[in-house]
Image 1 (cartoon, rainbow, N blue to C red):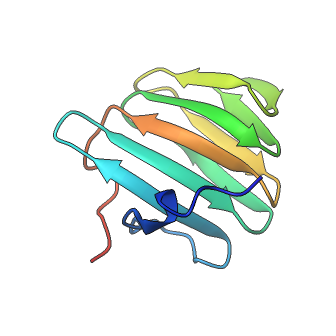
Image 2: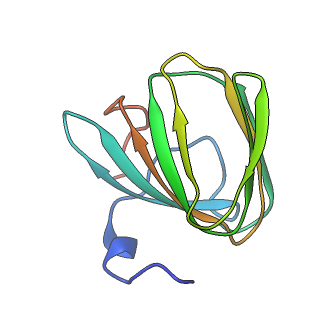
Length: 111
């Protein structure tokens, strides 16, 4: 599954991972941040926490550990990460997700 061309025109984020590992396309408002992530290579997301996050898997697979509980999420699955909950993941290449962050400026837009 490929993301539509118009989504690929959204600004990228300044995330701490290289573009050859994950691509990002974002919509930012003063109320939250919506991001389409496209994982090009397998990736390990180290444990961390922040304000609430909600997401859905469009394609591929994520093994999430959220607040000590590990689950595998595939296409159509929804995850809800409460504010402050420690979470990390193993993400397979080819995975595409939509993440919505409560924190509008979680990541800066690239200019």
